[in-house]
Length: 242
Image 1 (cartoon, one colour):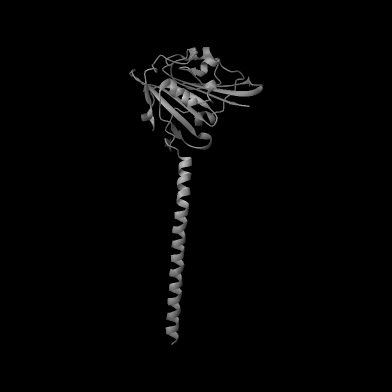
Image 2 (image 1 turned 90 degrees about the vertical axis):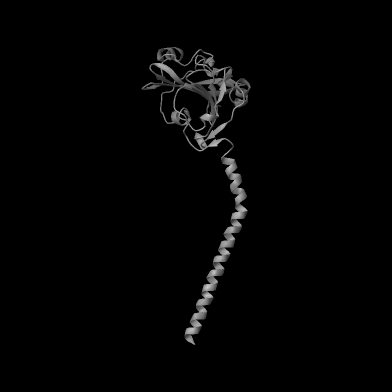
């Protein structure tokens, strides 16, 4: 009789464990059903259309220049240095991409990363030259930028670049800065660099502007890169805070 009672107890314990497991499985399934729509909403919030989860955009200086400590020059370059094809970084906060679309045509917006390194980009490419010239516009949480370069390796999303007849090997900023210029010519326009690294000249400018009685601090950064003593890459970025 004792062995039979032990067997019955074992059965009851086993059945109890099965019931507990079933309840746990059902609870997990119910939680998944309830939480799945929220998970989808979060995914949509953090990964908008056009999002690419990589940093293959080697030309972007959003991450790069934040890590380089260079001397700030307390002056601002001429406003014409911040203009290209009639697009002005000085007015960048207002309909930035829409102003570009009106000049160069519609293009897809690419989003990358998040937080301080998040950035949105639109890319245009020359249509006729043998060596393609890229003109890319970008904005982050801090800076509004444009990039002008030729050559370089492909990156994820480069197939989204839109061809434009307005982009040629000889065009450049309103100040006359363009690809193919020498380092000396760039220094004639901007003065002595804040820092130099091999075939690269970096500038960091800071100054103040007054708008509607408020004083704004303006930050301008220039990244010029050379190959065979000729400019092949130019990045100009601007930000302002009050």
